[in-house]
Image (cartoon, rainbow, N blue to C red):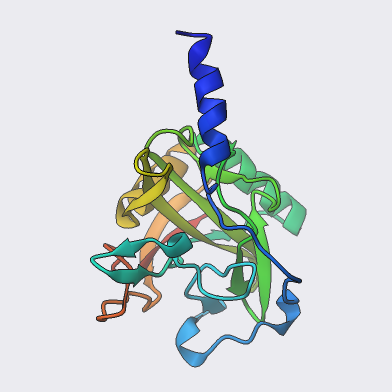
Length: 233
């Protein structure tokens, strides 16, 4: 069994939409992204923060077409990380990567990639880097796992800011392998607790991003519009 299982998983991974549909045609330039008024929250001391994870085609991410009770599932930003210790964006990124690994959320493959998040007046590409099928995750792709992407760092007064979109996904095997939505809130709380436990960040009061959707056409699942805020000690 130990020899058969890896081979079986490799074969199944080839069937996974990987969880992303193939892109045809040229991609738009991220510099052309123009969010609508409802797509941005302007926060005291932190400036404009995009409310949604953005796809390669510069549209709000919708979980690759996943539907919840017949409605489109929009993927909200639900974590903010403020680094007031690092003096360069490279140092802030290195601290973030170290904290993610220490929290058990190291980069793992077989995820969709190429996402962006708005901070200030521009889009920032995802961390882990796009184009490699990576996301920060606490488990393998073939099982339920907490996972997500981080965007930034953007310079703000006295430091650097990251935004992030994290969620809990389950694995569906039939009729077609794929990842299905479970929760945004559960992963927000899990990640915040584990990052705080590393000692590299500490939990601060939540920030209201106003990005809860509950309409006949769209939903943000169990997301309550709040982003967990983590800051350097």
